[in-house]
Image 1 (tube, helix red, strand yellow):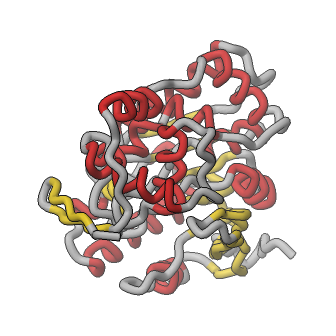
Image 2 (cartoon, one colour):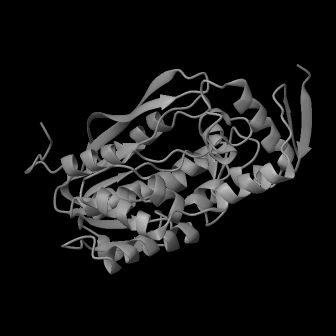
Image 3 (cartoon, rainbow, N blue to C red):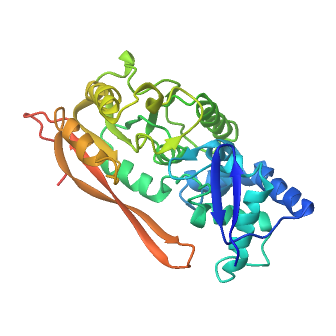
Amino acid sequence: MKKQTINYIGKTFTSKYFDKLTDSEYEDVIRWFKSKPNKNKVIESLSNVLTGKKVQMTDIEKYYFRDLIYSTKLKYSKWSIEEVLKNKELLGFLKGRIKAYPKVFKDTDPLGKNIETAFRISGKEIAKKPSNFPLKEAKRIIKKYNINNNYYDFSCGWGVRLLASLSLNINYFGTDVNVRLFDKLNEMVSDIKENNLLLFFPNVDIRNCSSETFISEWENKMGLCFSSPPYYDLEDYKFGDQSIKNYKTYKEWLDNYVEITMQNIYLYLIDGGYFLLNIKNTKEYKMMTDMKRIAEKYFKFVRFETLNYGKRVKSNKEIEKGTEDIAVFVKFDKDKQNVLK
């Protein structure tokens, strides 16, 4: 099979997989990606998540956060999903890959749905969808380490930890520099309130600022701080004063983003409060190792928790089980020694 090459906004991609899209197919694909779930269906999904009936985030994610997710570019991908959707030739590569793996992609599904799946499981070099935090695990972790019903999330993400906190009737405090994400999180909270999806509504206080910004009214208030922070330069969210834009080297990022954030967390936590960190080492940067070292200047290390991402289907239809570490620290007080057994 002859390889084909495409040059697009400064990047080059070559592949043996190619199947040209017709104009009609392209219009159908764009229509698929632009369509939003019915609002009533989204409200039903929110109700199910908040009441513990289901842990399915698909419609919620698509309705509130899809555009933000599609505009995010991963470091190892040449383009964002948003950029690829503007180029019919690149979509032709994905169509060709779909046809080459009939056991993975169903020919009875719309092409847009199959391309959406391809972005998720086999689009790494072209464009890949950023991962979201598993809701079931977010609920388990927040519930286990909740101390006083005040939880601080220093990098809000796509709303999963916010929903987990609300479902557990725990007050949620968050910071995030992405103003579009800030607006969408608050829109979701407003929809939950307006539709009376919770009998008792916890306090929600989300600030559109960096975690390096100290918020004095949060001092000595939080029983738990838990987040999955940015992986240095792994993701470019395109919007907001992202830490990688301010700190050009990894050392500057550790010194000015990580360390200052941890100093603020120390001040926010009550004695015996927990700080949980979900990040991992990569080939380029030992982020868990380095952040754990910095954290131990302020907190007592307790243990590693295992974060279960569940089963993932790869492009060859193999099933892989995703797990990561969560480092658990406590703001140690000699008189209280509040460490989970």
